Length: 226
Image (cartoon, rainbow, N blue to C red; front, top):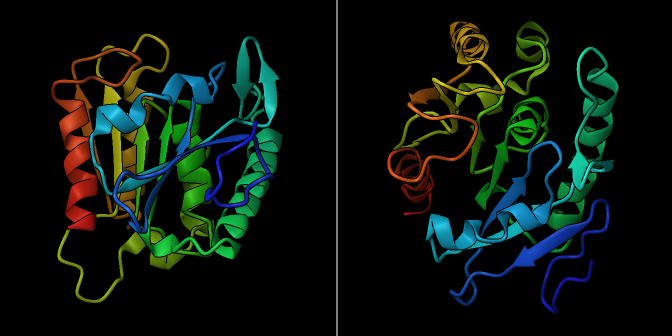
């Protein structure tokens, strides 16, 4: 999958680059899809989110699955895939930084499996990003994540920060694929362990809800780039 001239050099995973219409804007969102999906499923995300300052890097997960890809296997064999995909993501971010991307102005967004990867990779990654957003997912092992996380990343220790937590996790109360009870309990466990995250629930299934949820995501990003 070839990206246009001017895109950062990333070959650790297949990707699709969507540049910001604002010339010279340093802001970027890296997007992780759900199981069985691909970058094609999020080609309209840039338009839906409607933040012109953002460029987008859509990533394909490394493992073929149905018509698309997956980040890890179904339970109970998730961990090897999570570790492998985390290593791939670390390489992607290494390549982004080498291409001149400012990681402190880079957001990580994930849906479903991508939400889990946002939590599992993002919280352990050595570099602090601009913000982390996970929709309709869960955490593989909250206790391990709290023990192994980059404490600067999960505690929001940036001096002079004018906003709240740099993590936003959302879920649907009628999610037919991933029941809300597990995610709700896990997010409380993470919060009780010192993880500075904002958790919100919406009356929706396993999708991104456009009327109430999408504006919350948009505001979360806008608050950090304004």
